[in-house]
Image 1 (cartoon, helix red, strand yellow):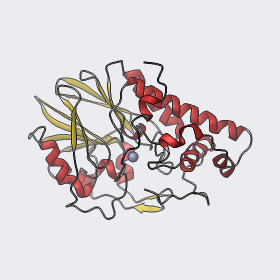
Image 2 (cartoon, rainbow, N blue to C red):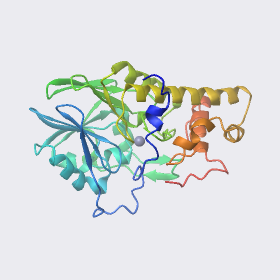
Image 3 (spheres, rainbow, N blue to C red):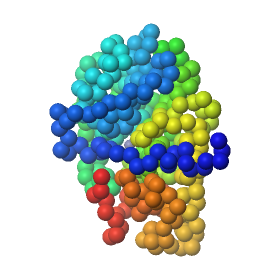
Image 4 (cartoon, protein in one colour):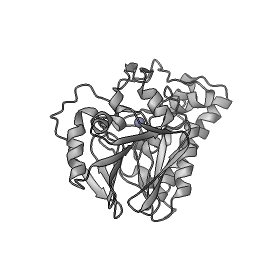
Amino acid sequence: MRSRPFRAFISTGLLAITGLFALTGLAQDQKVEYIATPLSGTVTMIKGRGGNIAVSAGEDGVFIIDDQLKPLTDQLLGAIRDISDQPIRFVINTHYHGDHVGGNETLGKAGSVIIAHDNIRQRMNSDQFNHFFNETTPAWPADSLPVVTFNDRVTLHFNGEAVAVHHVPRGHTDGDSIVHFPASNVIHMGDIFFNGLYPYIDLDGGGSIQGMIAAAELGISLADGETRVIAGHGPASDLDGLTAYRDFLAKARDNVQLLLDQGMSLQQAVDARPTAEWDEALGKTWITPAQWVTFIYNSLTGVDHFTALESQDTTTE
Ligand SMILES: [Zn+2]
């Protein structure tokens, strides 16, 4: 099994990644296909539009991890009701992006308790300018905001297991969590794990390559050979897939560090194509090779926002 280094996470091929952030033009009546995959007796993964969701449904009722895009909330709730018609008691947000917290307002109004890291509430409660998208996301309505926040870790004792929500500092953002279902043997990695495409690192939102690697390490430490791993985007994976992903992140970082050690500017580093070995497999779906190198370069040089180069097209989606 160890003889398939990167294959475990890149052989999934090109994925139709849509609706990561693009809320404009998204109509409520746009029909979305939801695919539910049972991962244990109580935990089901739902793929729709936006970040992958986990649903825990059992004797205590229902809670979910992330709730995708705001205009599609009613459709998503329909897909969850196909699993259980019990009320959704809790929502855990893995980070503040609109393709993971979009359903919060509807669910909060309906009485679900929204749980998230302190920094998620803080970012959702204020306007957020982002250099990568070159736009400002306005503060979210009060009903969208997490009601219970935590700084390090919180545990939900629900449906027969102690579900541990671990904050991982400065990864994809500054407010990410990964969620471990120990009895179900399932881990939801949030957007720490983009399975089959270059990851987005939200530098403006406090993310960094170093934190992404550390968070992947934590996921690996919680997993065994039977663990099902939910990525924020892309298909479900396993320990081998997550390990290959961590190795890729670390090697990409090392390749960029070598160029930094030679004194290269960001433009020179991008032009040197330090991620060429993965560009074909991972760099054609959303994040371009130049953007990916920029995330790493700026992380390593301590630049706390995305920098667009002349040669880059940051408007791709
Ligand atoms: Zn995200």
